[in-house]
Image (tube, rainbow over all chains, first blue to last red):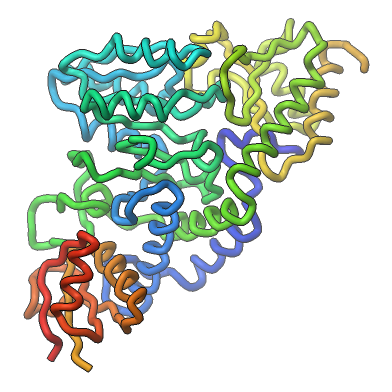
Amino acid sequence: MVYFDNAATTFPKPDSVRAAVNAAVALYGGNPGRGGHDISVRAAQAVFSARQKAADFFGAEPENVVFTLNCTHALNFAIKGIVKRGEHIIISSLEHNASARPVYALARYGIKHSIAEVSADDNITLYNISRLITPETSAVVFTVGSNVTGQLTPYRRIGELCRRYGICFIADGAQGCGIADINIKRDNINFLCCAAHKGLYAVSGTGLLISDGKYKLSPIIEGGTGSMSMEPVQPDFLPDALESGTINTVGAISLSAGLEHIKDIGRENIYAYEDLLCRRLISALSDNDRVRIYRRKGASYLPIVLFNVDGYAPEETAAYLNEKGFALRAGLHCAPLGHRSIGTLPDGAVRFAPGIFNTADEAEQLADAVNELTGRRI
Amino acid sequence: MKSCTVAFSSITHASKAKFILEQYGLKVKMIRTPRTMASGCGYSIVAEAEPQFIASVLEGYGLNYRSISEAG
């Protein structure tokens, strides 16, 4: 089976990550921050090392790196922790439900939202955001890159716009982290939410919320933090304020190894290689008029190719490809907004998301299978 | 060599302090905060240096600590 669903989670994980997971279970089984014995302290040091690597990678301070279960948890912490009754949020037309649903849910507290259309032209996207800003706008929530089409947003320019208006910028880096060049200080990102199990190669159940330290979030979960235990209120400093309960030590240690893997290969090289695989697929399908590829002229993309085959529902295409030995995800990808923006509701489309372990031959074999489905012999 | 104990609210802050001070070539150990320094859960570091030096370095990095004292 050839795995082309790396936008859902990267698979396989690098050998170094697998080894780190083994070591985590064998050697770092203590509960970090919950005891003074050597086994607990050793685990805490390993977790701190992971925080430090993530901080270095994204231009943050280690204490501002919060471990979460996944990117959805990080987005919920950021969105629900920053806005207050009567305020207003702007989200993009490409948002995943991980951002959109928390925002919709806040309507019951009188928090309004607007949706800024993402254009292929960054200037128009910036204009679309700025015209929605009101005196009540307290946050802009924008994906770095769409999980549906892979389209990159002008996140740096959005960060600059938010800085100028004094608005908190929450970036959804679920797809972009590990691929796009992201530095929260340089890019004026106040909160970066990451799915560490995707482009950062950590195991499932590992997410990150990274703050630049400018804004304080009200916690949406309280509990034991291993600190200030006599106090009835949650600590107000990071990471403790947002890390109640035992953290995922195995996930943190796997993240350390994943970040080292990226460093060894080079983030830019990973992006270039996966983009090459996308271009191979696009090229091999380009003269098949029964295949529609959803890319806009002038836009930039993460390594994702979204397509549909004329005469087949997306799930039918994916089921056919599964039989042929290719794992691709079809449907709405938990992002109906993104599909609405390209006119693929209600059935969605098929997503090709290659990874660092795929080859150009595999991408071309997939194209052969798609061409075969359309009855076109090449 | 004199040593001092620095108490922190968070193990992450204590870990960061340990990392920074080790860059200065100091020998640093992490311990649970002695009850004579602070109540409740917490972590401290014991470093082989004058308290004034440690305080100066940590403040230079903007790292908050709860208390600092010369180790007995």
